[in-house]
Length: 127
Image 1 (cartoon, rainbow, N blue to C red):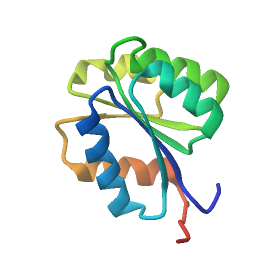
Image 2 (spheres, rainbow, N blue to C red; image 1 turned 180 degrees about the vertical axis):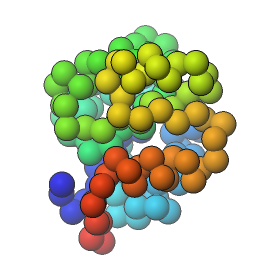
Image 3 (cartoon, rainbow, N blue to C red; image 1 turned 135 degrees about the vertical axis):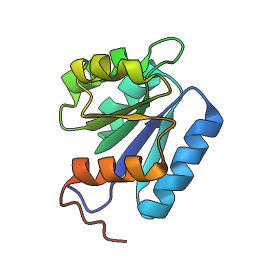
């Protein structure tokens, strides 16, 4: 894994993307973070950017996060995908689509942080 963490945040709500970016900036200050507003942008960005981790909203216009997860796993199987949703009943479908983890948007930030630690394994970021 490279020394700079590459993160892709995918959500159709700009405020949600900004909040996630701010949170990740605290946990991984030197990370390179990119954003996508829907699943089709996510697929294109994943192909070009090769993110280590993708924080993917489940439901978005155009192409939703679950379809984007399927497509990204086909072209960038090394990218770890965390599907985020306010709908906990989507967890099984998200995992079946190839997501590495599912975190409910109503869960505390510590849950996302622990999930990131689990997925990133021994990743140590160098500033």
